[in-house]
Image 1 (cartoon, each protein chain N blue to C red):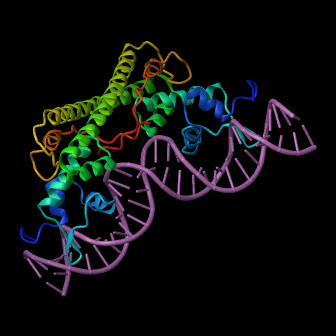
Image 2 (image 1 turned 60 degrees about the horizontal axis):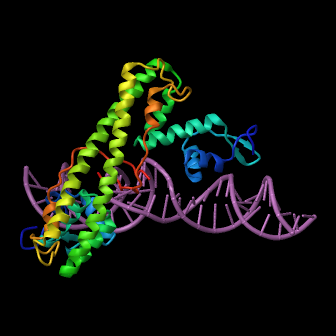
Length: 154
Length: 154
DNA sequence: GCTTGACTCCGTAGTCGGTACAGACGGTAG
DNA sequence: CTACCGTCTGTACCGACTACGGAGTCAAGC
């Protein structure tokens, strides 16, 4: 499969770092268009590579597939769409910051638990039976900010 | 259902902040033991409340259910188990830190994208068609640290 | 021409950590 | 008696993939 006829799904996968199975999945859910075919085999061009690369970058930034779909949809009509994209990105950014705050609280609590464990404050560390377990105590400290779920990011 | 006979699942839910459905789910996957019953109704005691509270705290810290199971399993035999728990927590802490690093990179990239959008560097912001889209460019910057998936945390 | 091995096809089921719903039953207050 | 809440079991669904089975296809080497 050469330059003129396009590339196969494996090559697309290699170029974008996106799993073959995932490419087919994206196609199935309509995130990627139905590609050309040679026989039963999918054939991709440079535009497909660009589109998929964009999807991957957006996913890396933590956008949900539906948001990626929206971003892709905006690609058609200039100026106004850019404002929409900006808005979406801004909302998303707020989410990312909330998530970081959550994780920092978790980090502090975990670090404290480990440190207390090292100090050997509670011999026996029964974790549940007694409330003297440093681990349990440190674990009690986290309070999450209100920020809804994130899909699994590889 | 009073103090002597134990509390119902709804009350347990209220006390631990854990959804009723989730309690039953935890029971189904063996994370919580089969509770006593009065008729068909589940009855819980203070020990159940403590155990579930522990599970919730561990989940808030981002431990996977399997890890929580392990932590609970360690609750039986003192000193050595504490060391194991510490190790698990430490590994987990490293993961949390990697995740924070990932998110900070994402944060920077997103903030930059939004800012560039404001500056109006690329009129029309076609997102995909041209590589001049500030959004696309900013999106190209993220490189994730190697840290595997996180379950959805409410 | 034939074999080998890599690649691709499609469809289905599993993952994780729950959530949501349907339809039945139990307990109590008015 | 009726209304209404809580609880019961079982199943299906979510997002974002991943894994697998069993077949077909392609190019290269012998």
